[in-house]
Amino acid sequence: MKRRPYRFGNIVATMIAITLTISGFHSHYNKKEVVYHVTVPKTSSVSKLKICLVSDLHLSSGTYMRQVRKLVKTVNDKHYDLVCFAGDVFDENTPDALMNRSLQEFKNMKSTYGTYWISGNHEYYGKHTDFTVFEKYNIHFLRNTYETVDNTFNIVGFTDKTSHDHYDINKVIEGMDTSLPTITLDHNPERFDHHTYFTDLQLSGHTHNGQIFPGNIILHYYYQNSYGLSHYKNHYLLVSAGYGSWGFPFRLGTQCEYDTIYLKLRK
Image (cartoon, rainbow, N blue to C red):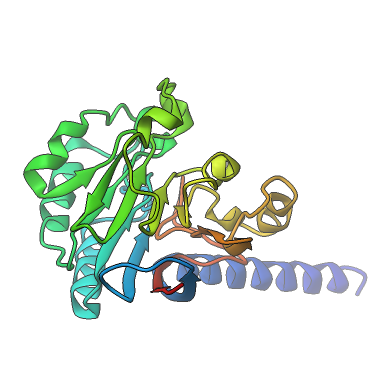
């Protein structure tokens, strides 16, 4: 009789553990679309842009070609104007064969203005730093530089701080027409304050929104914005929770996502 409460407690604890495990795997493999609406006080030859933000796939950490193909199909079905990859698509566990196969698949993404890509910290940890390879897959890789796209908007991309690249931000954007709407890609959101004088919208990842509860709460005290959309005067910072998970395919209290941004332009 005395042992029965302990047995009951063990059963309850086991059931809770099983439930949390199932929920964690489900949250990783069930990718969500998160939609944002942003208006910036600038005009262009277009009045709006539909942007897809993808971050932190961490290919081989529970994300493989099946999820890559699904993502490409989703992007093509939704008819975006612009697709942005905000780093950590690859990591230290991604084999070269999987990297090449995924890039071949990403080459099939269709959008009005193309696909733009920056590095994250894990590309450097995994030594996936031959960024010239992106050219043959019709992907625009931005390494501390900018492009003015079709005289419609600017897109600026920075390497992750773990690259130890030395650059002068003013040199990076030298000659850029800042009267045009400007989108900045930077994997880690903590440098946002350095970009607000030229950026209308910064797109970042890195945080995974903590990935496992209570990590999301802890990160809230570390970053000025660890997840979602924040607004500082006329400048926006959007931090994605990421399409994959790092280390193992598990999420708890957070979700795997891709983000759709409806960017409206007006004075």
